[in-house]
Image (cartoon, rainbow, N blue to C red; front, side, top):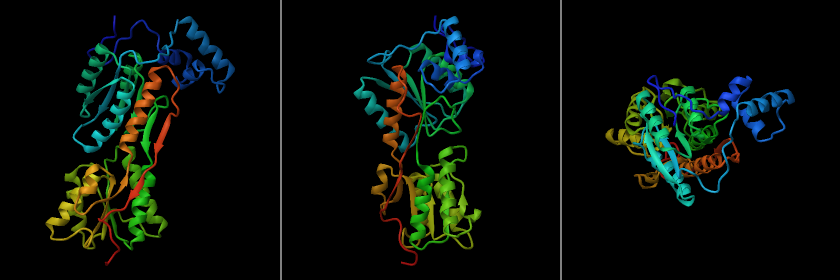
Length: 347
């Protein structure tokens, strides 16, 4: 009988013993139990003995390796789907899944509890080889449910600090924020505005920290008045640019922490009868396909979104096959793509 979703949102355990249950009873972490199962040497002898005894006594049955996934499905879960970068991640996941003969099920949870429980109920009814969570909080409840369903998980750009036993895939966001700021500094700009992403996301905070580090390394004090809040979408870029351009001493350049917000900056500048980059330079972040077709083409920090999807899919398929992933923490490199939206100050 499969596990059932309880009314309060928890999942009733079935007869199968999980790594989480063994870890709890042994008083150790889930990664420690995993290291024992994988024959790793970095476990204290008494701990290893205690864990091995419990595995034997409780009749733990390890996931069996297989040449192809049993369910033939990967679950790709977003908070929202109304973003071009979601499509890029999906493209990478689908490419790997297609090559492996595995389908992709896409869900959007909209950051609400109800849809999460509905999704978990659907997951247990149909089975999955693994779950890829994008910009999500891997809350203890959700992690526990996935363990009970024996569904390995991978987090892409996790919202908060991820659990130690969940592999993560991200990009060098701090380095990207630093590179964008240094590019504008090299062009002579000293008042550089930032439209930041949602503060709950690690990637947003890293881009902000990179921006701060760039200014500080140039001997420029960070002016909080030049930092506007945003949410990665067009409207917040427009509002942020309006607020920055209304300052008594407005910035001569704006670093928007996403391409979509950069396009909102473009519109705010246009409505004021000004031009990019003649009147203000703009840098984005992501390098979405439309960045090169914007007018002018957008200078941006390229985030390898499709590659992040590919790495996440390969990792979850490795876990589904009972194999240790190549790496549990992956950060893919970002790079600045220079186009025509930035120019030297006073050109």
